[in-house]
Image (cartoon, rainbow, N blue to C red):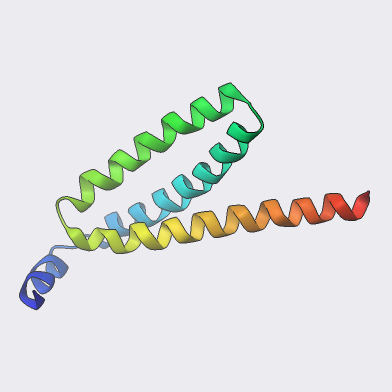
Length: 100
């Protein structure tokens, strides 16, 4: 297994890994946005964001099937994207509640 990991590591394109990371920061932020728009019953924004989500997800899948180590920037980007969008929404909600 270690031999396979080292072989895949030598084939990593770090620019592509960074692109995957930022793509998944975007997609998970967009996924949280999508969920909010579905709850709001906003059909246009939820449908559009859903379509973009699948486009970016396909980009990630096409890359990690060629090298499983691309899952690492994918997972990290996913975490960062969701964390910061939810934090932003929480802060907005707290500010809105303070103003009331």
